[in-house]
Image (cartoon, rainbow over all chains, first blue to last red; front, side, top):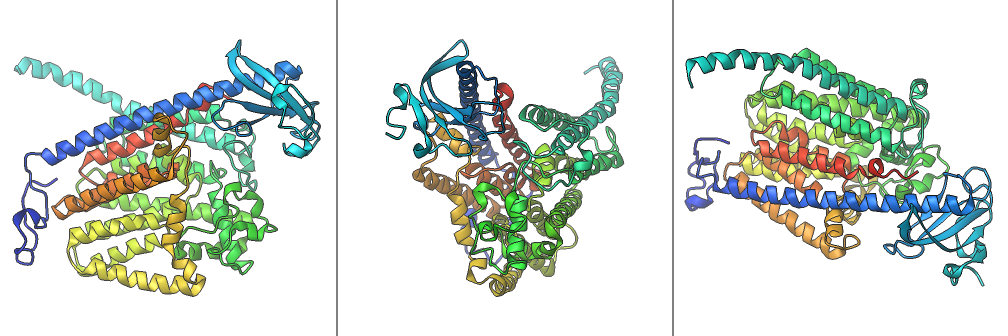
Length: 161
Length: 446
């Protein structure tokens, strides 16, 4: 920032009041504008930092829940498979109710019959509770018409009649 | 202070100074090692971080493991720490802690390592190629159709799912620049895009050097702050983003006003160059009002108008009215929401599930207020380059669609201004972006 006060192009802007005239360089002044700007910047930075850390904690919480869901699926099926798909939307976004699907025998993802489990509730010993589920034929997406062998109270209304 | 105290402080200080070259070397090597780790692991092919791509870096694939979040985030953190350390030990000491030649070699090595490797972290480059092939190989207007219109073209499988139905939002100059690459096939076009990104990056750094020197700032430190920046290297250059071409034109305009004797011709050329940049990616147009207010002459306005008319005519001739309807593309993109945007983070902080339409309006209002304040400050003598940098930073922070390469926009401007708050704020926002990525490192989901 400059030290000199240089009204720009004297003449053309003379009709304007002094506080409105353009300047080639900033006045040294008392630094009040800069102080206000810096204060606002620091406040904005603090808000962004708090929001970022809060969102990181939220994402970590979601990941920990998903880890518990995967562990629950593996424990329930006794298959140590790692290619599982988790649907967080089907039972309502933000409800923390998830649908976890995986193969019933070793194969590339969705290449064999899949077992989907409805999982929700608090995490106990790294797992959550299975409330029901269904099977899906190979090579299909999880749509209502393809679900069969539904079980558990949680699956009511989700499977075809 | 006594003479004795002064004489004691002398040797202590020189001993601590002697550590600077060693620390700088260590930080430089860490930067190269972490970059190489990402590239070598990425060369193994498709993963959560490496988009599906033709195998252009297969010759590197024998060393690493497939790139996962853990290795990537650790490497990114190492890069960030080394970058911060390097900036700290070299600041204010041009040529002492680290020679300019060593610095250029370091920056060149980082750029070349990423250039030789696979496409990192984004499918955007395949959208660029798809739009070019739509126009050249299939006779389709990329401003009217999404890549789904060429679903049998070999590039289609590489285009991101979210973008397959989306027509191009880039300016007609960029689309025309990409057309000569279309007949080269997907691999040829991909290398063409990578070369364009590398040259744009080299040009941006060269112009940053010139601008910093013109303002009596340390040019070596300035290009270190840009060229070794982890987001610039890994996300910007690694993804071969056209933001680098936009930044090249942005720095060309700044250079025209800062370097050499001021003249109407240079100011007109600067105005025209900003418009050219906006015809690549519209965001850079934000510099124009600040430049015009600062110069207070007709030259940049006339230059900008001439370029706008010429670019408009060429765009219209090539793509019809949709090719020059920048406002429609901006409005469409402004409605997008990404999980990395600060708007989404603040919505979560306030207990909301995400960003609502009213939030878009509030953010736009905040952006207008910031813009008006910056325009007023520029009118009253504040550096127009710094004001432009603040405006670009404000756009990225208030955008509901934030991607890593958006927070690169203000960086070259920040290193050629004397208001160091801008550089601090830009790097601070980048640091928050990186922190926000860390969830898979803390709680890894398979």
